[in-house]
Image (cartoon, rainbow, N blue to C red; front, top):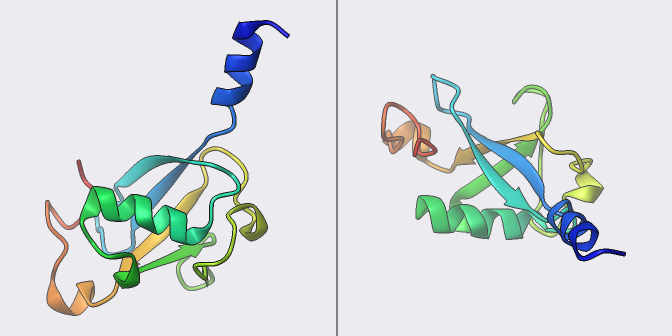
Length: 112
């Protein structure tokens, strides 16, 4: 196997998933790179670095609509939750955000 082929295989291990703030009226999404075998807690820890919101205040959902989406428990692996393709979108809810109005930058914590 050539060095280029090995590099391409390593790069392809990462998944590009999108995080959408459920309180964002504009529908902005933030891309993040994760490993397919990462846990939901790993994703929350990565979001903590970007958003400065503790993982304990984050709730992640996966599904077509928030009303039918299932909350993802911290111990669950992304693969086990059906998240194994590039481009999947996770919905993020920050506990207390709706009542406290903590969304910023035009209604989203996720805007760059």
